[in-house]
Image 1 (cartoon, rainbow, N blue to C red):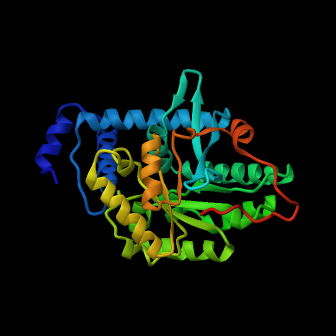
Image 2 (image 1 turned 180 degrees about the horizontal axis):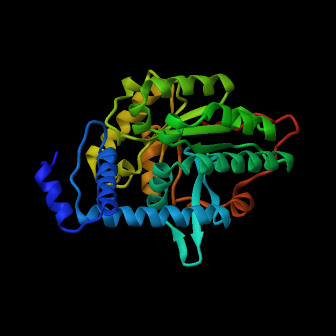
Image 3 (image 1 turned 90 degrees about the vertical axis):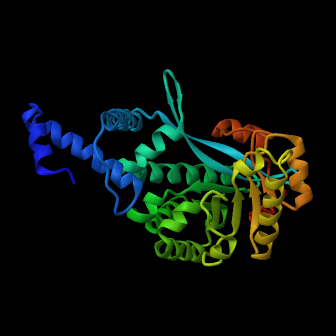
Length: 318
């Protein structure tokens, strides 16, 4: 803590109480961001970062009102057959000047609490689209939705998902919930309870970005998971980096031992796909097939009629 004399000097420097509170708030925010039992001293950079965050938050609130947010879908492909077995729903923010990167606005949405109404809206859109495709007679695929660690900690996740499934009469086994490895590690007990409840509902469960959170596959045995998604960072240099290839092979082998399906993220080249096929990977997604696209485009390019009226179960998938 700063000594009283330093605080007195700041006041004598003609800084208002309001300005001191703003600076203290900026330092407090930075300390919270670093984790529990942390402290942080104020710097001018913190004020600049706080202003950027506040401006982004204000713009995001306007974006919600002005319907600037949309859901895009990226296909998930069976490595062996090339069939589309699912799609990941990804949030996009489009302003007149162009798309805003999720890396810019998702953290702000989480820190401001906006992630809760936004997450509910995404789930609403996905269940609505899935039910619409079923009504049109398309062969069903599983739709995956990302769940933020903030939603796990502060939101009524189970009630929200159950409400959407019931409202749209959308089969739970066609919905997949994705959580990051770090989200599971931060709130292990809460996450385990929520995943168990989702499993009882019939929802498929996936761990996203595996390999970035420093947990082990043995640790994941505590959770009722169905799919393990290998982080893109391991796939980027799969062709040239022996270490990444060996790590990927180990993840696939151990994941299968635990009864998990394995999906590789960020596949961009045919050689990467061939290596993943040789290693026994089950599914992939990435620019090799398609980036995330608008729902209408996804429907036109990837949805196929159901083979028979009785074919209500999803094709072989995660």
